[in-house]
Length: 571
Image (cartoon, rainbow, N blue to C red; front, side, top):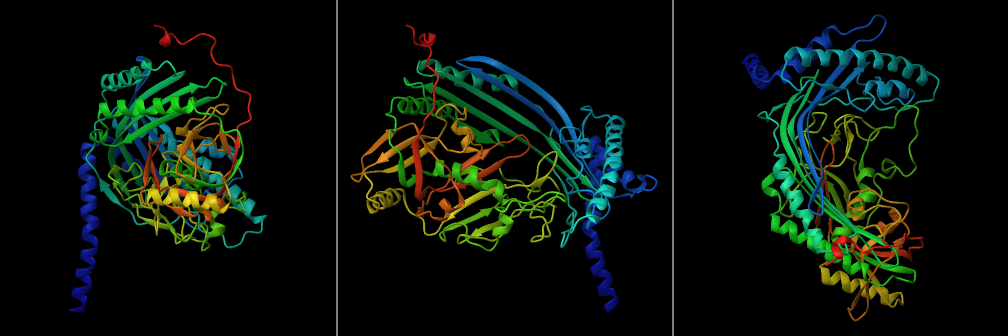
């Protein structure tokens, strides 16, 4: 009886694997690309070997098959448009073992760039469903990369023998193989429809002579992502992304340039805002820019409490934190920063009332689609939620298949088309307790009174005030011009509740101490989506009241305004 139980249990374990293999075999009959990838990886792992060099222990192919279309327009006229159709292959060939292989070595940049085709990617592929042509391209790329990485391992071992290296983590984590096959999408996009939308939105700016420059870009990309490796993972996922980006710039009489923008990123075209709503957002952005343009310059410096509304707070948090939550070991031959978050694990880095999770399994947040949502990452590991900060204490980091001393396995956050690395998916910041908007403004006023200040500062949006060329779009998604941050929409808040719009101030810098000394945070999240060239991300955070920041008047030499009036201003 015991023997039968063991046999039955074995059958139950094997059945899902058999069914998964059947699914793959059926899919390969109708999908030339999948068949070529699987056939070539099976041949490579069994036959690829050079004399006196180690054979590969792991091979992975990631292929993107996509069509793209984009249109840009200014003041109702098309400035550029294009359509594209491409297939790109990333190969990851590893020699050695999971414990020690050719990766995580900074000793030879030449072979690194050779391995990734000079552009962090394996190779371009035929776009036609020709089995022999596709397989030939895979074969050639694999052969080239194997020769490079086999030499890398020899150099890495020689380098390590001359160094004091202790407690080095494994080079590659062991993960459960996955079979997940979505229906194949035939890439096809409607360029004329994109063009019509870009032209109509950009024409709105013709009604505002104050606008110095503006632009609208509408783009879409759709297709299939494949991932196969020698562990048995077989993934095919289909999807699309649609993006709308709108920007505008004005120039004040004193020469100060001010710019703002907004963007929309969705996967389902049904989630795109209605055209009337997009038009209204364009007009609101323009009118806000003109109001800031006509506002007085903040002449004096300020040191004291600053309230960032949710949109601005999300931008600032993203700028300062999103890349720092990425875990993984340093490459042999390199060094880590003393400020690396791996050195701050189990320490409090935020106030006790703040919590941070990264949850790429979320499809919607606050009623909005989540661009940072995915089912499997770009290394074939299932996405999962990770609690990063709990009651202000740093508890974990997001991980790819590059282990560290602290974390030996992936959290399903290996992201990137050409060179996957640990990266956030959907970063969510929440407060407990959380304050309502009126409570936050009252706390701002009280904090200023405690400091004996005449007024406090409330920042609603970020943007560039000229000189750096960075709009609020760039600030919003993690870029920064210089060491300071230039608020675009900023108010002086007086004890009686009166507010005065001002412009022309710069925040000196942000550091972890400023976030750690937050006084309060709001109860409503602002959801910031970005499309990205390779993957989408989402950051959501509430309003934040900082205990103390330094603001100073921007001291720069601005360009003179145009001599002639804009043609749009002539009657």
